[in-house]
Length: 151
Image (cartoon, rainbow, N blue to C red):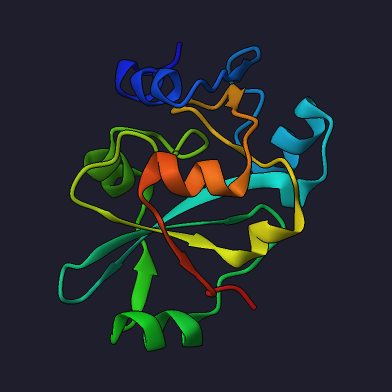
């Protein structure tokens, strides 16, 4: 089931999620296999927190690695990935279904690693979805800031 706050945003942007059996898309690799696309086309959403308490979501290609050096340069501090409980507390989404839709009070950054693809697939709030869209629509739908944080 797609969370209501996510569905509202998808509807507003005329987007339709692909829905599968529960637990079938928990990682970029499994999502790509289930959807039938390249792993890089999966837009994975990762949550990071700095010592200052600053929280940021980075959305990047499923086959990309985030550079700690680039993150520190952008945020001015070391950022560490949040654990499953903190991710859920901050976003309302469990790992495997974390998405950039319906997020409040968290900065969202969209990495340029997604530029390689005409169609990308972020999750829709659970571990059984993928939402086909363009990078430009992802930026618009999330008010995300384009960035270069991957190696």
